[in-house]
Length: 230
Image (tube, rainbow, N blue to C red):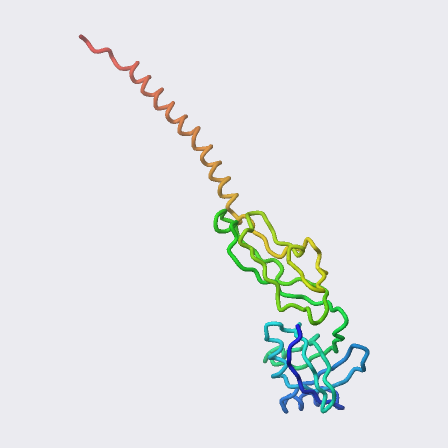
């Protein structure tokens, strides 16, 4: 999704770990801008501006403008980024120029809403299997996310990638049968029910057998008892 955001960038001539360290101390990070038929350019950008984009609702699917010095702005996306393994601070990013007339491959988050009947009424368990699907579309048609209502989802039913409604220039790239979410039987419930039925069947003959023994014992005692004189 395209946003009205401009990230200022400056070209850099230095390379290596020491140069990158000095940039970070100065509040900048190294980056590379490439793609759309243009040359690859080493630049520096503000990590604060990039973090705002990465943590926004559209995240790395955000299309924004990059302005190098006093030059023209060019649409770009964040393709890759690197965080410090301990501090978690942003260390480097790759920026790709975007041709707004050409289709892109992107992964879009899927948000589900509603309470499935398979959980509320049928006692099942809801599971979200895939949180995003891959599509192809024009840059201006990239959605922030897809929303799917799972209220009518019953026990044993699933939402698949082909069920997600697409619009505009969007085309599904993920497998059509890819399971996004489903409602399944709660683990252990079938085994518990089967075990309970088995115990009931086992207990019933024992009760009958015990009753028969008691009846037979009472009959033997009656026979053995001396007859009462009248």
